[in-house]
Image 1 (cartoon, helix red, strand yellow):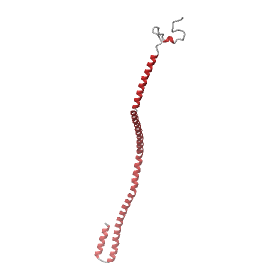
Image 2 (cartoon, helix red, strand yellow; image 1 turned 90 degrees about the horizontal axis):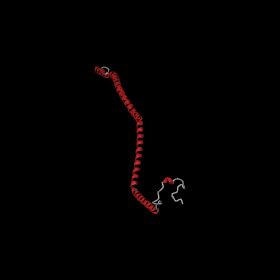
Image 3 (spheres, helix red, strand yellow; image 1 turned 30 degrees about the horizontal axis):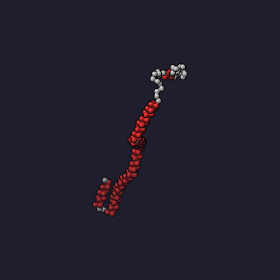
Image 4 (spheres, helix red, strand yellow; image 1 turned 30 degrees about the vertical axis):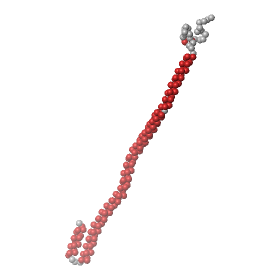
Length: 172
């Protein structure tokens, strides 16, 4: 607005005539001052915007790193706890896996040893048969000691001290 007034004043003086060199120099300074003020205002506005943008650009990485640091500080304890839980579960699963593998191998080995168990069973049958034969032969070779006509004394009497009772009733 100030520029428009000065410019119109310059035009008016130029039209009236007079000392044109003086008028030109006088009005040139006024016009120049108006231009300088406007230019200075625009330059200040541009430098302020550039300064503001530089400040934002310079501080934005710091702000981003601050946000990252804040996020890490808040989430790290939970992450560490979860990691420890996962490690504990992994150890339990690994232990169960080893136990299962060991049991599977034991069952496979038992299946492979069925032939050995069959051999053991056959040997036990043979041993029982042999024992029965030995008992039968032993019973056949020794006759019974008690005659058929004589009464058998009870076992209680046999436990009484020797010599008190005689098994034979022949006293002569």
